[in-house]
Image: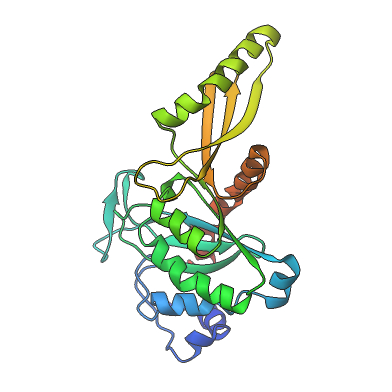
Length: 262
């Protein structure tokens, strides 16, 4: 099967010009010429320096996606969360440009956060070296609620906002605000929403990060949502900043594969 699009795409990436363009039996099979090193090397060709300097920030959206497999491909494993045999690639996008800066093929049974810190360790120093005056920000879902990632962001002065699962401590801290919304709802019969934050540091964490939360009370149910961050903006703005990452989920591998599937 001929794939004329691939030579055109790879010809624009310096690290691929010296590598032969080959065909493989399936779309979801690993690509031998592409290694973590070459993937990160190609990122420099899609970051426009002038645009980055004008904006003054680089916004990294980290996400994992499912790439279903059919057959006995290497690294194909069953993933209970997705209910299928698959690869579980890791992706790092730049939000403002929509560019895929880094990608890593991982086994189907890999956890959501597996290898994210090594990927960022290859990417972030290069970005900071190229754009020393530019602020780097990072967003990710609850699959990346990892103390090692928080420490990485603090060390490299990255502003991060990550979803974090609720636990009994968080719920207890938010309970007074929840009860307040319940009373207000009974009085007005209108949906209620409130934002707030607190500091929390488990014994295993070296720092005391900020936990922002959103409490809602409607006719259907009471809802709590928590984010962990090192930024000092109001909690409502932190949630607005995080919710914008929903666009990241639309930039998965599937739309990128479709032009080459014919």
